[in-house]
Image (cartoon, rainbow, N blue to C red; front, side, top):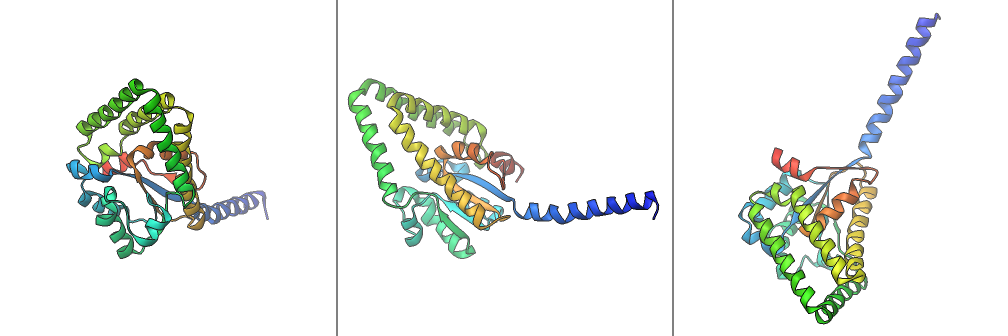
Length: 242
């Protein structure tokens, strides 16, 4: 065997190795879509109605969904009236399409612990610093009023601008209301991230759709960009292209 033949054999071996490893790596990487839900605001955002939400979920065609519900809500398919998109759209699709579903909210007693802690801290803040609390409320109302002027399509709701506005809103309240408020939001978002990781580990290479409240989208997207085994889809660009 001459030198040229040896080099050709070596090259063929390298190519074969890359071809055998490449598909395995691709199969282990999950596409993750983080799609915002608006609760009662779906009814006042014509460009992002329940019908629009249903069409987008069908177009994404996920294998796995991580939902903005508690384990008990997922088990019983019952939610508070404010989460109308679940009874109208999401739960029916989960049943019809047989998606593998994970609850993005914590199980008890963690659920009540976080919600109670947040509620107590916000009440304390409003009692002890009423003037600043009034400004904080005005900021919240102004932020959503401003976004309502931009939300003409689902891509607008899931845009970088929306994430930026709500990130600033969150950072402001965390600063003025105190670290316990910030910690409650941090723990809530960390749990959602943990459930996406669990879904990824249990279903490597599968397409995962995360449905979560619009205020939580930015932090979750930022965290998922750093996650191994995940290809985070640019939701705004995907929706504009679709």
